[in-house]
Length: 492
Image 1 (tube, helix red, strand yellow):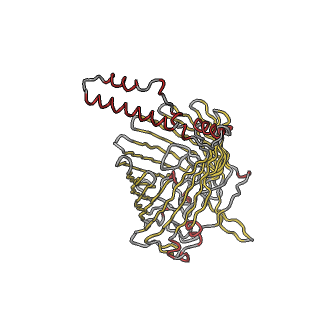
Image 2 (cartoon, rainbow, N blue to C red; image 1 turned 180 degrees about the vertical axis):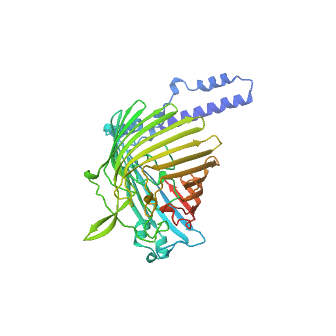
Image 3 (spheres, rainbow, N blue to C red; image 1 turned 90 degrees about the horizontal axis):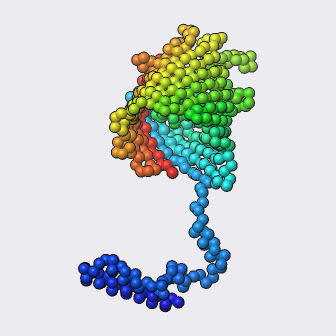
């Protein structure tokens, strides 16, 4: 059998050589005639199929079932991926370079102040069509890291609060189950991040997730949000989306720890009241949003614990001690954006009720926050964003201006950010300035940074932050904390 195949193949090769030689030697011969002559050699008696050519290479030990299985494997569609694992490894260093070394509780923060490495893992389960009842999926993220600077400089030189908050991190961040039992209904329950409103750099109606404020000025708000356990039901009808939210976990902002370079006082903070994450302390929120051609509108309501604290003296064994407390408040908000050419105009407002402060323990206040801003992209590879917020406190009491409240009747916050892309968007330069007060007399900072995509999965970022002290408590003594930072991130 093999000899017959070889003779037939050699016969056709010889025929092809003779014909192509004829074509080369006789240019006047029509190409169609040459191909006809070539095909004449393959008459019906000499046709050999691909299977015939491979007959001599059959596995003598292969069973009929194995051969059938090979055929099925060739016809089978590729298996659907169920598990997805992504994440990044990041290392970062921070160095304070101000002339006057910032000293907090005996700690000298001059020079290199952080050398941290972190690992973030994102895990997602998307079941196959066979098991995907109600279109469900599971998403989880975990974060772990260690800052080597405390070992290198000596852990004994830092407060216990600093070591607890900065040296190590190990947290299960997001973990939620998502399902869609019907086309117009989505359900998500678990630890998650929910963003309200349209602003990018300030918070007006975006209040559901607390923020990590331990190292201010180096990161945008999108990377500062902390996940919270909640259940959310979304109903969609045309351009409208109605969200009903029940927040199960009581979690607040993470401020700079006592003894850290950004902690604004030499005195330790009062003990903070711990609220149990139980049914009694559940928080609630509603949002109705509509997206239309060129504009959108959102209405919001929330019954939550206020993220900032007030101090109240409570009895502890017959002795009055100060305790930080969070009061239950209501928020009513509205947001809107309008897109016109290269412009995006945006506005937000929020009315807070039942606010309580330390210096006026028997009074409750209402406050109106109003934001207006724009984003302009008319210049090549450039984005310019401006956001202005004013907080107005009704029935203002002059006692609120004193320590520890430091509250003004009107508090203005302004943010300007300019971003410019270079080298086909591989390099992004950013200039951001944030200030409080009409003349930034209440505190401000400026950040200049560059982010470069070295490769598809490797990114480097470097920058510098300048701080100016001001009248607000969090800016009391921040002016000596100017710093440079460098990050290198590998994503997978």
